[in-house]
Image 1 (cartoon, rainbow, N blue to C red):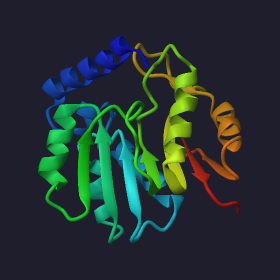
Image 2 (tube, rainbow, N blue to C red):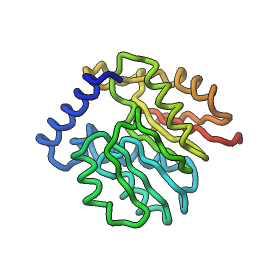
Image 3 (cartoon, rainbow, N blue to C red):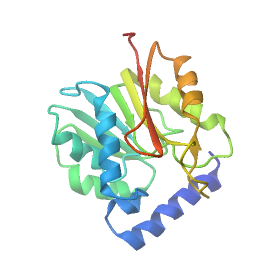
Length: 203
């Protein structure tokens, strides 16, 4: 992703922070319900109790709060390039044990190895380099010792947008199958979204 594309994303979210304050709309979600639905699907990747989890594009750490209400004993790392989001995430959750937030560009940073990598919304931004998405998926998968779970906007139903972009689910699934012995494609939970699980072990 080019520098100007990254700057456009930062500008977009800073504008939404001014307009929507600390609501989920500052993150780009339509409503809290759609964010929670995505979290519900992503968390089905496995039994996450007692596991280490890296949240790519963590925003304000909303996934951390979601998981804490459902699982226990997790070690959590949240990564986001927006300093405002990381500051808010740290204020909300940074005091909790085994919880760390880092402000960095996940596409260029050296990522640690964890049990599960989860990315909600991180691959929704438009990029002229179409190889960017497959490169990031491969990078995230390389950091997951058990599985990667991520979602993307569905090109079949997501309308044309100046900043966000939909993807062909079958093409993404085919690429993921080239890396993982077990891939699951999940649809139907939202009109314009799909989720993929990439496991290290076959069925």
